[in-house]
Length: 349
Image (tube, rainbow, N blue to C red):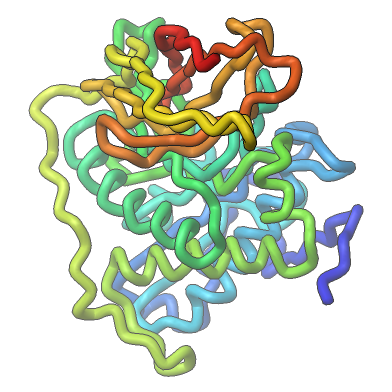
């Protein structure tokens, strides 16, 4: 049986030099000279940069454990060299992380993170990538594999593969610093947000013994599929794996800045004995997928927790009205940039 832990042991693969200059990182493979794919793993945060802090845990510790597990799994594959931006509780700038990948001629930089939200109500995994050209195409192709692995192997809800450009720069560069720095050095990169540390849906994915190692193994499998690697030790061969090809966009791909265009509900059935209403929902957004809904049974005075929405455009849901309901239902639908549109209110009884 798994045991809940309250402290995270920092497992180090090798020590970086005390100065932590970008050239300090070394390939973490004995056969580096013969490898034809170079992967750079970046455990997010470190040092005084703690990251998210919940349940007596610090993100900087968790990312290092995930990264170490990812490294250990990836080095079981043939044809790959693995480097890490940090292997201790060290602080690095975002540009230094990208420069380490560049100095080691990395084919891809993977920045490892866990998430949190201001309202503490979001859950699921997401991958952020560059909005520019080939960096976008490669990031999107990998991100689709990554989120599928986290969903199928671990059960984390998928929030999608997304871009975010800097509004302060008139959308001329990527918003996230490590991605922007890597893109400027022509290194494909993604930020992998494995789950949320501050929401009940996701606490079961990272707080038990073995959870972080499972994340790292899923990450490694996604990398192996993306690059078509094989492992005699693991008995797997992804050399014929067909990944989705994503075209490089002619113009930068920015984030969706508008909420869903349509949110409408109709009552199709009501069972007074169980106080259950069945609703038909129209929920559409041309800019990004709709991924959650919540509902109110008191004209918006209070709302339910977020529920996953995977229907394409329209679907059906059931809502149980509590005793203190005023007999109405209102729906809120959210796209994967967490922008919301409120539906009409229907009277059930």
